[in-house]
Length: 313
Image (cartoon, one colour):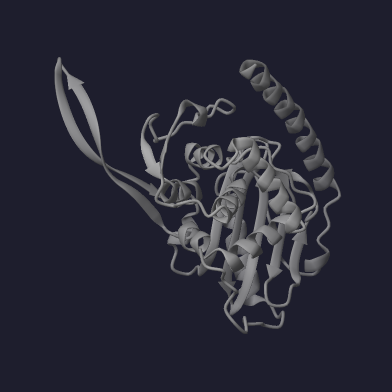
């Protein structure tokens, strides 16, 4: 049964890939940017939105309603649903064979049988985009993985994300799809109500501490202790000229390179959504171009009158 389900997922994934490619071609052919007419802003990403959190205005949009796979941007919703459940963050969770990626075959530095706290897995999912960590969070949700995915989709509906659907907690499935406009709602809500996500997702690095490595050379066993450290998948979090309040990257072939951020630029709190950029560094280039555009723009400036509401987690 598991094998048949796996084949079904693979088949559906291939179909979704074809549909996504067709949609990209159509969108690229019909591209217009009504929010930035006359502005010298050329971006690589296929779908873009720049949103002013204070005024609620879309400052720039390019194919904002194009539904496309979103890869590991999914993990923002995974984090919110996990925190909504108010499960103990210090609870130990064991990595199992169920957490291994059978769809894309991605690797992991989290060995089977190792145990980590829910807080550690949450940090790894948001900072390092660790797929086993994200899947383990979903698997240990009350009711299991199916209940977790249902909660993700229910949360999307509550946020008015009507062109969004989730099929797994990692983003490896190309059936995790959304639009730039919908993801603005996701980022805005996460930034406003989840201080844990703000703090974790903007951390430059994260360490699980020392771990034992056993090496055999010429029949002799040698034990070494190494630091299991990770860096944020968004390198902009390590650049002083950026003031980032929330961040998440994503990539699978079907989604291209994606990036969502909340940032303060030129005394303006904005949300930037970049989907389906070609090339590893294109999304970073787009983000920097948007930053320079906002800094040099004659659009009237707004500053947040008050800090965002926080429910505390």
